[in-house]
Amino acid sequence: MQNIGHFINGAEVAGTTGRTSDVFNPATGEVQAKLAVASAAEVNDFVAKAAEAQVAWGNTNPQKRARVMMAMVGLMNRDMDKLAEALSREHGKTIPDAKGDLQRGLEVIEYCIGAPEMLKGDYTDAAGPGIDMYSMRQPLGVVASIMPFNFPAMMPLWHVGPALACGNAVVLKPSERDPSVPMMLAELFVEAGLPAGCFQVVNGDKEAVDALLDNETIMGVSFVGSTPIAQYIYSRATANGKRAQCFGGAKNHMIIMPDADIEQAADALIGAGFGAAGERCMAISVAVPVGEETANKLIDALVPRVEKLRVAPYTDGNDVDYGPVVTAEAKQRILGLIESGVEQGAKLVVDNRDFKLQGYENGFFVGPHLFDNVTTDMDIYTQEIFGPVLSVVRATTYEEAIGYAMDHEYGNGTAIYTRDGDTARDFAHRINIGMVGINVPIPVPLAYHTFGGWKKSMFGDLNQHGPDSFKFYTRTKTVTSRWPSGIKEGGEFNFKAMD
Ligand code: NAD
Image 1: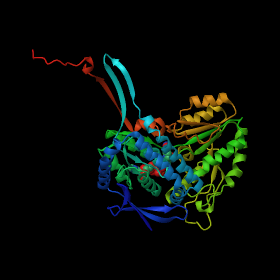
Image 2: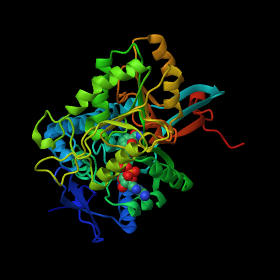
Image 3: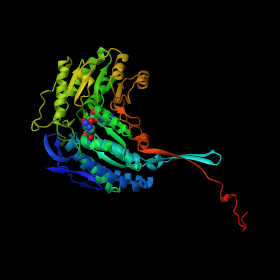
Image 4: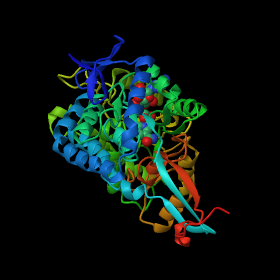
């Protein structure tokens, strides 16, 4: 049994509370590690140490900080296989998917190599008579990142990378489900040349999170996770005078127009709906075919694809489509929602409620499910299932279809499949959702753009990564300067008597 502590001042330290939480192997259902759970006093101590380390790091020139990012890119690539294995072991996703998780995080570190350019300020020459005006972006100091289980590499890297590149120290509170990769990343940053104390990893639960939210040294809070917690964290952090960006849950719709290539749309839905067991905030969980004929063709194309999905542990090779969900509780919740869908009248066209994997009976596997005739009042429609369940909501017109996506409380991502540019353009222009795919099922923006949803999928204003992250992790100082006339007016060389 492995024990996992905290990563403080450049090394792993054991917890002092005696409290632990279980880290499972989702494929077997076994507890594989005991994770330290920090007290508020420990958190406050770790934050104070981060504040000490931040002073020199914040004064290190941006190019030197960028070199740490450069070295980190090399180290992550060196350790890619090891990191992916550790990630899959705790999360359950397949190795290629774990590498995608790492790669999308790594790309933000690559973007951060441009920190010197991003941090250049503005200058107005001669803003008034003899007056110049300039503004600079300075680090906040110590910031906190509270992260979810579903992307244990990508999500921390999206926040820690820009925060460090801007000269902050970061205290990261990873998910208690899969903390090993964040600990490994912290160690790699030290190897890359980051001074000890600038990246602290504190493990824990609500007590640790609340301590971060109430700590006066913490100047900014980034959160990614479910919507109720996002809203709570945003309220408490901002009430305490901190800036905050909190990203929440999702219910992403894909609209399939009558002119779409149904085979392409069905392939896209399989990956977007069932990849990573549906545990992605950009998963497509609702398909909205427009017109009866489109719906029938779509169901015909989806059923054999869903039935063919290979659900197995990541150790079973690269042709595994998806693995277990993260915990026994998550599995129970998903199965409960599937039951509610049947009771509320949806048609379960692919039913795997009795799914069992031989040799892994205690694992948290959920077979793939496909619902047809879902309506907007059902729990499987209103709630984020976060599991391998795809719902088809039939629409008769484009207006009805776009209305479903617009009226849902979440607004993270969406997609449309069509061959008609005019429809696609109208959709992209009118939709009240942050990330839009046109014949692209999971439109996750690349590192140099920004990632963020609308409506109940985001609280705050600045998005993740890209230029927004450099704004979030710095504050602006503007200097107005005038110099009294000086020696350029000519020196006085004669010895003069006082008047
Ligand atoms: P979660 O909200 O349960 O947990 C997220 C973090 O909050 C964890 O570190 C957890 O320890 C902490 N936490 C949980 N309960 C808390 C409480 N009462 N008080 C203080 N802290 C608490 O989310 P999760 O299950 O880890 O992640 C899945 C969710 O994240 C999904 O809803 C998914 O859509 C969302 N997500 C959103 C994005 C995005 O960018 N919008 C990205 C990834 C995941």
